Length: 312
Image (cartoon, rainbow, N blue to C red; front, top):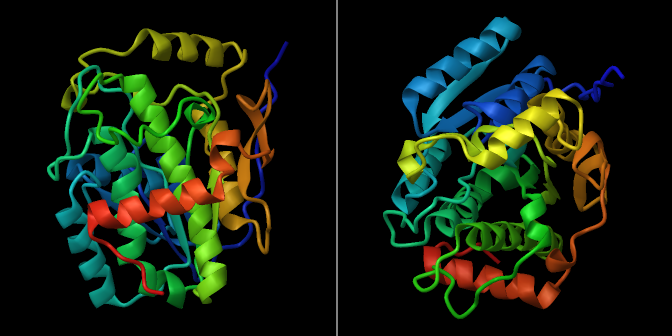
């Protein structure tokens, strides 16, 4: 049976500045390319300059009129986050869209960021928390939409409050779930605090379902020298249209979340196979993302750990 290709129409984004983390490959590159095709100016903060240059070439090949540029960002370094924010503050351009898409997944052995945080918690959540906080003035000026990419992993596990940095009994999969739960709670709390303090920012969540992205590919920098069995299985299922989506379809929930005007929807995801693949749409929040008190606790812990305090 032929596969039905999921897609959406991205509204005109002419005149808007969109910042996409993790935009040098995979889902992030698809998101950036689609936003460029809709007329947005694209800014890609990247850790690897060579991959960034390749991404620019790919976007310009598909969208010859694209306005796209690179900046350096290593989300595992709070100093790098601060440096990027300082650069963008100096440039002074309001940010209209911020898609927090970058992440790392399940290093086989525990690793730390340069600031001493467990790598997944420090990169996936704390790095983005610090980035949004540092960019808050520019986000306010642009009355930005902030979309944070979580994962189906946020539907299991819990926050390990007794050991946030997994210094004992490290489990890569469970630590990954924690990072995405914390990140999702932050994204929802950002929306509540923006409404309470008049920041003018709207914040929501998306998740890509299951697709053969590079998160589980060979990543020597996180101690994985070959693709995981899980990635090989997902690639096979995706090629046959069974359960898993494609990289292109997996980008759609974040695109919809970031560009749907005046929406009260908190969470977007694929609509088929128990939200694993298919066209994007609104999705019920995972139970682990519904706790308002838990979200406030995550926020306070994140301010303490990063030293980044959001203005009241």
